[in-house]
Every structure is written in structure tokens, then in C-alpha cells.
Image (cartoon, rainbow, N blue to C red; front, side, top):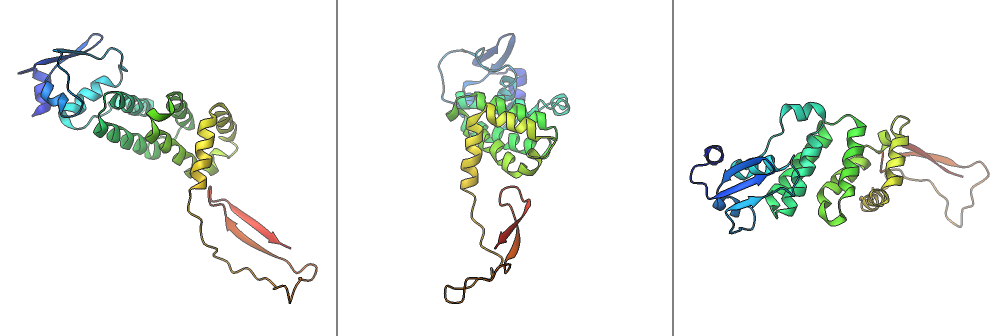
Length: 223
């Protein structure tokens, strides 16, 4: 098994280091996922310490797992962001996709604390725009999906402060909303033609529908 090869270091022809950590790796394994190099030692000190062990785990197993302590502390989102960032810099597209998928799953299914979401948005938008398009899209989709909650009394102040602080995040939400498919009119609206109209005073009507963004009901009055 490849993962055992990393543990034993057998037939290693490449040493990967990050500060005080060291892995006895194999060039052929790294070359299958990232552009190969010729050096016998690969130093990753410039990359995030949180992500490098996950990257090495992925190279030898095709996956990476976050320890239970990270799940409990809510640091899983941060771990996936870090792995995504390092994988992007190392030109590892398969790991980029995996980190994005894990981030989306954690965000959508395992995060209830709104402050964790706000922190993730800040970290993602602190990076240069082209570097994390998939993660930006994920947090924008989450904002649109949970708009009713974000604009509720508990979350509204923090959400408005976040969008004011990060105008790119705010504009990405607007752009996402403009690309939502238009829903067909589901209610036949009674009206008078130019020959039969105008309607008499008080001959109005109301139509109740839901907001296409957040789902809240709105009543439209036609007078």
C-alpha cells in the first residue's frame, strides 16, 4: 500500500520537509499529482503548516481526513481552505477539487455557528480573487440559500457588517442572484384590456408569492 510506503520510507528518493516535520517520500508518487522536480529534498516551509500533512496523506492514499479534534473545534473549514490553497499553489487539480468538495460538505452539513461561516468568508476573500474561485462560489451559494436566516434579527448585524467589510463578497452575491433562473408566473392575474378598462376605484386585487432569493412571502397589490 502506498500509505505504508510513506510511513516506512522504503525506497525513498525524496525528502519532503516542513519546518521540523519530515517525510521520506518518492518522486514518482509526487510526479503523478504535481509537476515533477529534480531535487532530492523538497522544502515546503513557505506553505501552511496545517495543510502540508494533509497534502502528504492525500498523495499516498487519495484522500485526507481531519482529526476528531478539528471536527469538534470547528477548525475543519480552516483545514479545507488551507489544503485548497496549498494544492492550488502546487498545481494539484484533483486535490483542489477534493478540498472544495470537503469544504462544501462541512459548510452545508456540519456548521451551525454563524461566526464560523463569517470567519471562513473573511479568510477566503482575504486571498487574491483568482486563487479561490470554487470556495468563493461555495460561501456565496450558502449566503443565498440561508438569506432568510442571515437577514434575521440574530445574524443581520454581523452579516451586514461582513458585506460592508468585503464589497467583493457583496457583489458576488448580487451577481449570483442575477443568474438565478426566472420562475414562470404561477398565478393568472385578472386584468382589463384598453377597451374595457380602466378598472373602477377599489377594483384591485392582491397576489401572494415568495421571494425567489430567500423564500419569504410577499404580497403584491395591483390597484
